Each structure stands twice: as C-alpha cells, then as structure tokens.
Length: 128
Image 1 (tube, rainbow, N blue to C red):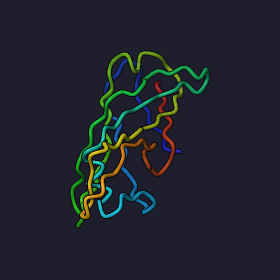
Image 2: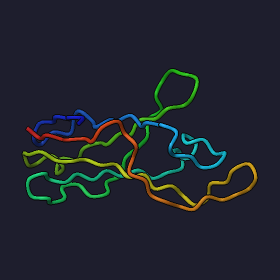
Image 3: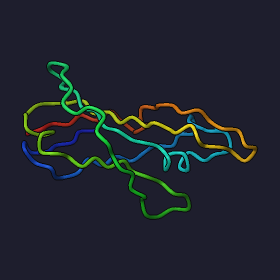
Image 4: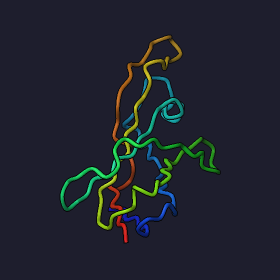
C-alpha cells in the first residue's frame, strides 16, 4: 500500500507515481513508453468509508524522468481545492486510455483500450 498524505483544502504536494513496466503490457513492436506518450491518463479517488467518488476521471499529465538509457515516465495529478475539501481516506486509481492510431513496423494498427495503470502498490490518499 502506498500512502499519500495531504492537508485539507491544500493543492500541494502533487500526487506523483512512477509507472512500472513489468513486461506484461506489450503492443507488438511498439515500446510501452512510446504508447504511453499518446495515451490519456485520468485519476479517480473513492472514499473508503462510504464508497462515494470524490474525484472522477480527472486529467493527469506525464512527466519524463531523468536518467537511464530508456525513457521512463511518472503520472502527475495536480490537486484542485475541491478535491481535498473533506477529511478522510480515499483509494486512488489511474486509468490509461490508449488511442487506436498506434501502428507497429509492419503497419498493424492497435485498437484503443483502457488499462488501470501498472503502479507498484495501490494508493491510499489521506486528507488530514
């Protein structure tokens, strides 16, 4: 479980999670990190106590991480004041929607699709 803490009515710190490429997600000859650059990423946050959705499909951005031989990305969610206006514990998930326009070297086009972001652990957001 990855715990993230933020004060009530705050917008900082940003929620940043590293994507994990474990080899299970492949798109033919198209590298995973090439696909992610074309994708839409959203964040959803659900109250653990009552199941109410606090944040629904809010847009995120990708941040290129420094270092290494291959490109790696983190997902960044910028909080809005209304996201943190109530105290509690929330389960956060990121969803990646891949476009249907990706083609590999032989011209095969890959269909659009959704994926719950492969991150190391589930995210629990605690608003203090």
